[in-house]
Each structure stands twice: as structure tokens, then as C-alpha cells.
Length: 248
Ligand code: 13P
Image: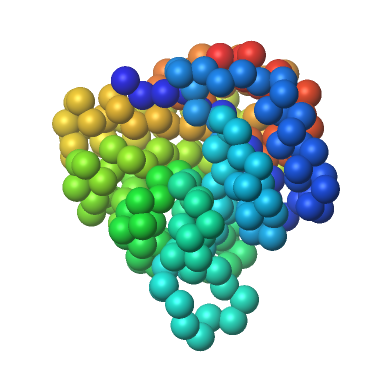
């Protein structure tokens, strides 16, 4: 059966010393638990030193380039993150999609590169405000999954997680309503079921992300088909990250 997941996306925050201190603080306060996966996604620069002192909290990359090497100034390749021992990566975060123009077809290449390198994918999806207000958000999100993720076979898909992050809720303080979250997560589970069957659908953890913090996390985590959270701002504070783990 799928696990509960608490993941922290540190984005472009924290210097080296602060990253190590945050990792040490949350490691000391949390305890390893078979039913949970704890994962943090620090900036690239800090990955190696965190991997070298890694405990039970997994360490993932926020990004990578799907090519193995070559003339891609400023990029870090899938083989380079694998080489230092990274086992998880975010793909399709809305900040990559909107600020860095990553398309569904480019994200599909990243998914394939991650799978080839045995890196577990946390595939992010979510609709912008105009789609939430004027179009069909479920269709928009399921299309993101169909175009970038659902070409995988069952064995490959089983290694992935999905994170639903409505763009209008990220960093805005506006959390989606329980009804909106349950509806989207259930729609994603149903899409998984119709493409891969009930058994595989039941094995995939679906996380919610977007202004999730200790004050609202109990309500979010109790929504139908929510298996955990991908947390931005509140993951930078050791006490709030630890409090979030108590909200399941
Ligand atoms: P916030 O929790 O800061 O809204 O960020 C969510 C997010 O983007 C996690 O990937």
C-alpha cells in the first residue's frame, strides 16, 4: 500500500550552513517510520554535502536536465545528480513550467531520463487561476499527466508520486478548499485506475501542495485521496515541518 509522504521544497532558499542546520534539526525531531517517506529538495549547491551526511530523510533534486552531458551552460544533468546518490527529483513544478517555459513534451523527456536512471519522480501538476475560474481544471490537470507521465508502463509508474499544486495557491496564502482538493485528487486516482488498473492506482501517493501549513494541514491531509504534502514556505522552519508531520 502507498505511503504517507511529507516533502519539503526548499526552492532557492538557504545557504549551505542553514541547509545543513535545517536538515539536522528536522532529523533530530522526526523519527524514521515505515509508513512515511520524508523527503527534502534543497538547492543544487547543497545536495552533495547533504547526501554525504544523509539520514532517514531522503534528499531529492528540484530539477535536472534530461541529457547526460553536453553544451547546456548552467544546467545539471540527470547522470550528474544520479552520480552523487540522488534518488528523487521534482518534475513539472509550476515554477519550472511558467518561469522556465518547460512544456509537457520536455517534461516527458525528463520523466524518461529519471526512470532510466532509477530516480523516483515526484511529478507536479496543477492549474492556473484562469483555468480554475473559467475552464475545466480536472481536464487541464489530467492532460498534464497524459502528456508527460502516462506513457510509462505500470512498473515504471509505480516508482512515481504525483503532487497536485494549484498554481494560484502556491506562496499566496490561499489554500484550495477541501472540496476542490478532494475532487482533484479523486479525479487523479480515477485516471490512474482507468489507465493502469485499481491495484497500481492504489500504490501511487498523491500529495497536495500550495500554502499548506500546520494551521490548515489537518484538514488538507484528511481530504479524500490525499497522501501527504509538498510544502514550500513552511518547510523552511524546522518546527512547522515537524508540526506538519503530526497533522496526518
Ligand atoms: P508554498 O507551500 O510556499 O505555497 O509552496 C508550495 C510549493 O510550491 C511546493 O512545491
